[in-house]
Image 1: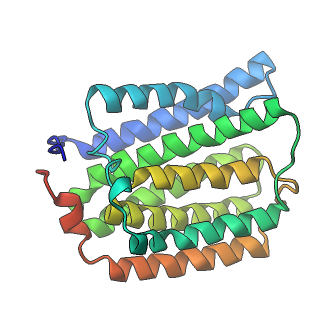
Image 2 (image 1 turned 60 degrees about the vertical axis):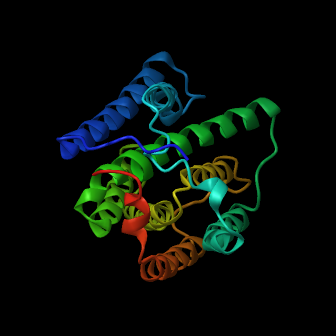
Length: 252
């Protein structure tokens, strides 16, 4: 196994603020482009996340930071450790049930939605469960997990600008925060960020291609949030070696 390169920025908070501003500006700018161009067939996140994805891929590759941001643990997962991901599989089943499956329209539409889901999953997981989580970790596991998850949840405030009701937006923030906590704990425990990306992409794809798009908060959403809260508590108590695992082979 190659030794992890040193990663200790002098101003981590400034970097996080700049990342958040870049993300917000990218989404707002993409929305403006769609409005002005009349390309209503596109989503702002799709337009914004294409350059974000290219930038992150270049950064990770040229700086050789894949291991720094938790891409190295997937191959070492044991059968027992895979059980930690069972709640995520259950959540995907519940989401599938809530949407009554996916709508099989044209191949072009399915391809677009699949690429869209992958882009969102990759960018948001690398930013929040990769870079931001890693930047905050020197402040302690609790701060890293809760703050990165809170920032992830608050990004969904932009949905209110798009016309979503305040009540539904607040529920979505809590929903996203809980998902963020569970994924962050799993990433710290197993260093398998690709699985977080896969879950995020699958979750979004089912919702994007839903046979019955959700209208407001449903009982399914509440069930998922309860499952996430229980999973977070179990992971929090069971993962007593997270600091050692993340710190192994690196200097903070």
